[in-house]
Figure (spheres, rainbow, N blue to C red):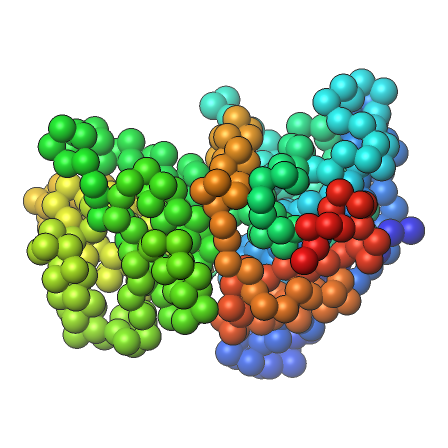
Amino acid sequence: MPRSYCITTEAIAEERKRVGDDMDKFEIARVIHLDELKLPELGPRDVHLRILVVSAEHNVDHAALADTVNIAELRGGKIYPGNSAVGEVLAVGSEVTRFSAGDVVLTHCIGEPDIYGYPLRIFAYDQPESIGWYGEEAVVSDWQIVPAPLDCGLDLWQIAALPLRAPTAYHLWRRAIGMFRVKVGRVQRARLNVLGFGGGVSELFLMLALHEGHRAIFCSGSPERRAHLESLGIESIDQKQYNRFASKDDVKSFNKELKAHTDGEGAHIVCDMLRGPVFAAGLAASARLGVNVSAGWQLSTGCDYNSANLSVRQITLDHMHYETLEGVSAATELYGSVFQPTVHREIYAFADLPRAVAEMHENIQTGIPIVRVADELPASVAKLAK
Ligand SMILES: NC(=O)c1ccc[n+]([C@@H]2O[C@H](COP(=O)([O-])OP(=O)(O)OC[C@H]3O[C@@H](n4cnc5c(N)ncnc54)[C@H](OP(=O)(O)O)[C@@H]3O)[C@@H](O)[C@H]2O)c1
């Protein structure tokens, strides 16, 4: 039987007990366990996949910590996480026409689309019955995968960094620019100041902005990520210089620097996937009529703001979750030409997946964490595993 990682309510409860509910001492790697999985029978619209490479995502962090909700409990006591993967098709059901054995594909995380195509639920998180891809094999519906653009110019690890993060960035960007353009037309302002805070989604968001001719500014605590983005033409600010906005004075100093960098105007568009102290910094540094977009709450789920202040400055706050199916395909077209992600310096072995998630939580990685699941890769993929 193929092996797959799982998170159980017992493991979370045991770890909480071990640390006496002190979440600073909670060790995420202790609650992500390798299990054996009986795969479902291949239905007519199903595809049997061998998982090659996956990226670690923060929803696993949220599942292990049970900090947003206790998703393992809500899913009946156990979840099999992982919703961003590169896989090889082993077999297809009788009605599948878009894929055949040997194809290399990417997964997306839409569990079930709403009437407009946006996800009601996320695969391998709150979508009932969904079994994630931190495992050796999987059976998925054919609409759950898209062809992998192996000739896009990226290496395998960069491709593996994108299936979840690139569609998120793509959706954030098209919303942000759309909302700003409702308020300020191209004839009034062509080149915008676009600010993103640390993280993989944010860096991809800034690559989209830069590609469309805007000024992109990355405020991050990671020197490696800043260096990579600078090499692409994205300006950077060291977030640690402002103590990660621990106090009001730090926010004020950051605001002063950003305004000085932008002829006093500030950021027309801000991508904030973190919230918490970052939210206040993003709002302070916003230009008049600015747009602040987010699809994450890594540092806090709550946001506090002064409605009168934002009304007078005509600031738009927007929240989203994930792209549509069409948007996932559109974002995949931009691999390599626009999206050139930063990858963490170590490619983790399958056995080290819990450590990869733990180190992501500790924020000690130099880029997006990638885990190699399969030792043997198809020839078309092996040549990209540089
Ligand atoms: N809704 C969706 O579809 C979706 C998709 C992807 C991600 N997300 C969510 O978005 C968030 C970010 O995900 P990601 O994949 O972009 O992140 P990521 O690539 O894993 O990076 C996380 C970043 O968080 C920053 N960070 C960590 N601790 C911090 C702190 N105390 N203060 C300020 N910054 C800190 C770090 O930036 P530095 O460089 O500054 O150290 C780090 O690079 C997560 O909550 C994730 O769940 C949502």
